[in-house]
Length: 261
Ligand code: HXC
Image 1 (cartoon, rainbow, N blue to C red):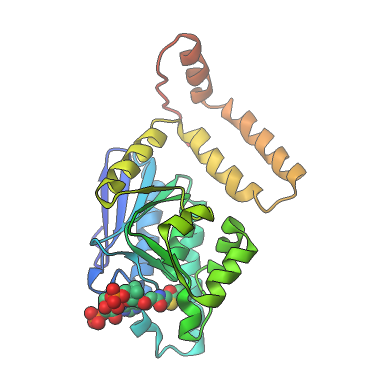
Image 2 (cartoon, rainbow, N blue to C red):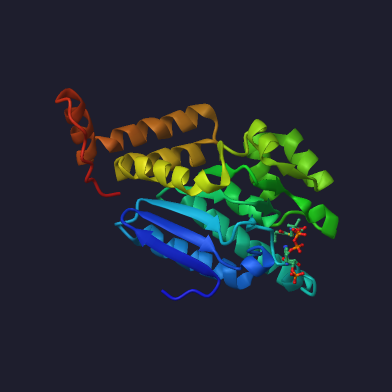
């Protein structure tokens, strides 16, 4: 599919989606949101793709937020629709049956932090910076920031970031649990590819179930979530991957997972 604001490359089991508006630090407008939705939908259906990487073009920015020039003259209805459109993209990312890894290679501000939060985890370069500066523009986060940020790093840090609009460096982002790992700029993509390949070598059924269980179970009462886990554990036994994985361990060889999810 031809996209104008993003790049979508598939190499074996790994797809890389790159938000590609470097002149405006990869700011998100309705077209980017639409193209991201199309790309993630297509990659979700592509049986060959097992893991997706999301990053930003250029060496300065992942995504510096929603496009302020596109938002300035929006009326309230258009603003709501844009918020719901971006929330739709982030919800789609979370519900995709395959992991999405954020490779944050610079500024991840506003909608940039929000779209990274919708990925399954974040690896970042030493130059990465995060923040929810919407308050400086007279608005609140609109692509899930108040909700996903507080669920990930706790209400206090979410409130400090959303209320001050401060931009934080990657060391603090790691300390509060927003970022999993930090790499020198020139090593980030290799590190992300390495972990993507490792995950792609696992079975589809278990990979999908892990993502769904952690995402869906998180907001449920523990006893309900544990029941979901037991049901998913049981479902794994309907896949050839369970026999392959356990058989490979007992035969002291590497597993070759072929199950479909
Ligand atoms: C539109 C943007 C932009 C943005 C940067 N640019 N961020 N354009 N929307 N979010 C443009 C600049 O205008 C400039 O264009 C070019 O990109 C380079 O940026 P500079 O500001 O010159 O770079 P620098 O001085 O290095 O500063 C980088 C920066 C700063 C700190 C990231 O650009 C910045 O503060 N950007 C805005 C960040 C922000 O407030 N994000 C939240 C948006 S609200 P020219 O033409 O001058 O070269 C949001 C809401 C999400 O995300 C929810 C929506 C529903």
